[in-house]
Amino acid sequence: MLYFKNRGIFTVNSYSILFYYHIMKRDSEIFNYIQQENQRQLYGIELIASENFVSDQVMEAMGSILTNKYAEGLPGKRYYGGCQVVDEIETLAIERLKELFGATWANVQPHSGAQANTAVFSAFLNPGDKILGFDLSHGGHLSHGSPVNISGKWFDANFYGVEKETGRIDFNKVANQILDLKPKLVISGASAYSRDWDYKTLRKACDEVGAMLLADISHPSGLIAKGLLNDPIQDCHIVTSTTHKTLRGPRGGIIMMGNDFENPFGLTTLKGKTKLMSQVLDGAVFPGTQGGPLEHVIASKAVAFGEALSDDYFTYIKQVKLNASVMADEMIKKGYQIISGGTDNHSMLIDLRSKNLTGKVAEAVLGQAHITTNKNMVPFDDKSPFVTSGIRFGTAAITSRGIDESGMVEIVNLVDEALMAAEDDNKLNAIGEKVKSMMAGKPLFATPVTA
Ligand code: DSN
Image 1 (cartoon, rainbow, N blue to C red):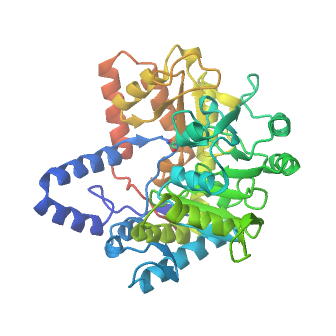
Image 2: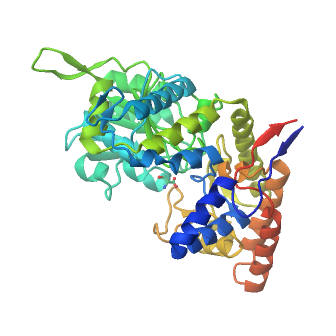
Image 3: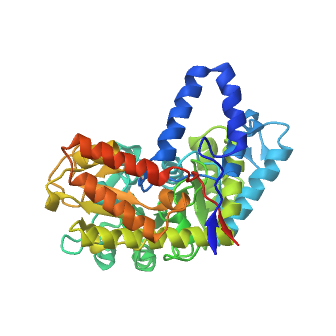
């Protein structure tokens, strides 16, 4: 039998209460805001696909005295003294991460997913080089070549998208695009794409033109780690990810390599030694694009990787996937149009045009009912990114709170009720009360315990 430990509704654990006590005495302004955010998180339904709730241990490591330590460099090769303890911590983080994904090499220092991607670009590209990524307006990510990001400003960014009829990427078409374009780097991965990726087809095309293949698995990394989606590690030259989405760690980034870590890259050095791709990447993180690593966050990443190696996490992430598929089915039953007709992962993108709603209105209406989401462009959208025709849902956070399939049916009913009451404040407030009572008493991080 599976049940969930409840550690009270004021906050997530006693450590946090201690933390609040100190901060209350020393800075009541900030304490009040943190308490307000604590209440918002506790009583709301969190459906933002890129968010999650971390365990007490993950949070404790992040709030630890490790924040005091400078450690530029890598374990055993630092530019500061006193790194003997953080060396052990960072090494453990790297080893756990490699075990989790079956990677051969890893760097755990990137401060975020966008930083991890920027390090990859700075390692292997020169300004003006051609890159090929998934179109932002079809569900891609800013750091994959958008003109407002360094990746689009410094490189010749080209894009692939989904098919209008299916809402899916046709990987054979992308392979042909790679053969025609001959980019230096191809990026797979998305912020709002609910289907799996064909890394093998992409790699074959990349090999034919000598392109490098990067998989940014920030969204589905937890599902990939546990074998619930295709594995990019051996097929892609490089894999980047955030650590705070389905992986349920602190906010941060990582870079990994599988088969290609010992590939030589670039010119031989003055001493006649050829650099390996992994060495070039290490140098691109520090000193290339970052200064001192955040060792408190690296410790917290290590804790999260340890959790993700456990059977409890496997139970959790399977439930995330099941909850998403139940949610998509229930939305479809209520007449909503899911891009690609469903989901293989934790997320879904919903085109609201058939309901005569914009993403902007839907986000605001659901917010009034304490259901947090984000508006999102849908493929071939006729509205601006500030309005959008779509909304994106994800189940990683709500599953951390202990919600199962029956809870997802209840949530879809509340979502639909709210969207259908878009201009009725009284009704939206009443739905908000139902949401509050549904979430009351559910801890942010509900640890599954097998009795
Ligand atoms: N902005 C994040 C997301 O919501 O998907 C990705 O960086």
